[in-house]
Structures are given as C-alpha cells and as structure tokens.
Length: 390
Image 1 (cartoon, rainbow, N blue to C red):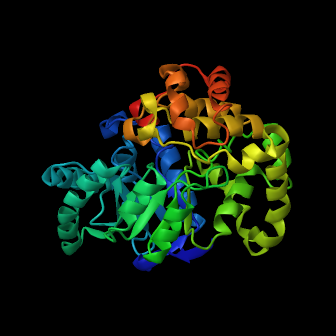
Image 2 (tube, rainbow, N blue to C red):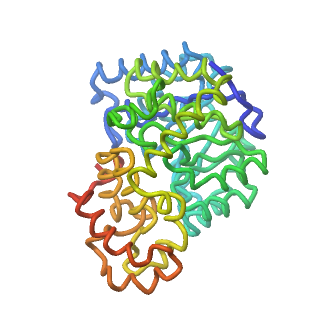
C-alpha cells in the first residue's frame, strides 16, 4: 500500500480507503440478531482483507443503515493505533439532536473515539448553515477526545463546496472528482490551499459504473481496465490523497491494487489513453461540442422548472461518446428524486420552450432543445431512488 499525508490532520492515509456502504445488511437500523451470519462474516472478512492490504481507513456513515452496528463487531478487534475510523452524520438545525446522533454512532461502532467525523451532505447554503451550527458541538466532542478531526462530505455544486472550504472550519473534504467528471477541480485546489485532506467519493461507481464497463470503454482504456485507468488518473494528481473503494466482498480490492505499481509511470501510461478518450468523444460528438458544450449554461436554480441542464447534457455525452448508457440512465432517472443530493428535474418534467430565453449565452442555443428531447428518449425511464431511500 502507498500512503499520502492527509492534509493538516497529518494522518498517513492509504491511497485507497474502505468505504462502508456496500457490505452492510440493510439500509435501515436493525437489531444485531437479525443480521444473517453469512452477511456479517463477509463484512468482517472484507475489513480484515483491507487491513491485511494496509488499507487502515474504514469509512462509513450514520445514514448507511446497519453498517456502523456491523462494523462495531470487528473494529474493536483491530489494532487501534493503525485504524483510521470515519463516520459521517447529516448536520441538522438542532445541535443537541446532532450530538445524540453522534453518540448513537459511537456506541454502534464500539469505539472510544473516531479519527474523522464528516458532516454529511453539505450540498447547499442551508446545509452549510446547519453544519456551522453543529460545529459548536463537534468542538466539544473534540475537547472530550471523542473526535480527532472534522470534515465534510458533499454532492453539491463546485461553488457550494468552495464556500464550505473557505470557512476554514474543516480539516478534510469528501467530494466527487474523476475522469468523467472533473468539475470540482477548483474545490480540490481550494482545499489544498488550506491544507485539507482530499477524499474522492466512489470513483468506480459514480465514476462510470466501472465494475461493469461497456466494451467501448474497455477498448479505449486498454491495456488498463477502466477502473485502473480511472484510479491512476485520480492518483496521478498529488492534490488527491485517497480514493474510496466501496468493497462488497474481500476480492473487490483486487483490481484496484493493480494501480499501485503503475503510479511511478503515470506520466508515460496515461497520455495515449487520454488522447484516445478525447478523440473518441470528438468522433461521436464533434470537436466544437466537446470543447464548448458547457459555455453559457444556466445553473439548476436559474432554469425554468429547475432542469439540471449541465447534468442532462453531460450524461448524454457519456452515453454517446463511451457507450455508458446504463450508467447515464441510472443517474438521469435519479434527477428530482434525491432533494439536494441530486437536484433538478428530468426533461419530461419541464417546458422546453420556456427554456429558450435562458440559453442565449450558449453557442448551441438553437440545438439544445432538440438535444434535450433526444436525451430523454435515450435515457428516460422509471424514476430511481438513492440507495439510502430504498
């Protein structure tokens, strides 16, 4: 395993972290005796494999159902001096209720303290305001030795992430950034300016469902698998410290490990693959579109009906350029189902004609309405709920 300094925490963070949202039994709290023995055995085997590999960062959340409770059966058995424990709790307007939730998390985990406490889902100004109110409680928890460092996780816009970073109240950030979605680079730079740790959320799943990639993407990333390519792309940037591996079983680490021996040669390995990927997109979408499609697009709050125009067109690009149709369908049909976690409407829920006056700054203003119709025909389907809502 390789390690990177996790910003001002000074923790030596493994470049892969073990995320805790795919091996648990339920997305709701359940009594311990309702967890099937084979499920618990698999979870414990996954955590032990992570430790055997030097992946000492175990990351979960109060919102991951039975994950904390099940981890509490294995974490106290591990060497505490090596374990980097992290849980995440959604900030709320009532700090006292937030503290009660934290105490529940700590009791489930059966730990005296957590190394990293993340305020979960700072996605807009309202959730940032709630988080800042909860920080008074968090500081007391730090004084009591129950929390070492505090950060936040986010699915918000780059602007909202930077706003949270610029409060300088957080030691690290969990955010989305990978090859197919590089929008948050400004936020990563801002975090580095403040010496914060940078944790990339779900690069293999949210980064294109790379556990089951389409053949076109496999061919374009050769000789690497799309998963290893994406890992190498992310970790070739020293501003990124760790990538989450949402392991569901012990063997899920295997493909990721192939990245480690390649890091020293990233400058040699990546350029031809990056060139192929760019040319493949240009081949199917056109050079002008690939280079300029984002220009002048209104954001979701400025768009009639709250159409998430950037996301809709981005998903269309991925489906057409790289055959990431299944991934794009899944993400498209989440729109409007996840509140501030994945905001905006789908195309069939808005009046496209009412959109035209808001497109005047786009060089593709005349094309976009028809492209939106095309995108809904390609990707539309049954609305999809977030995993935690299922």
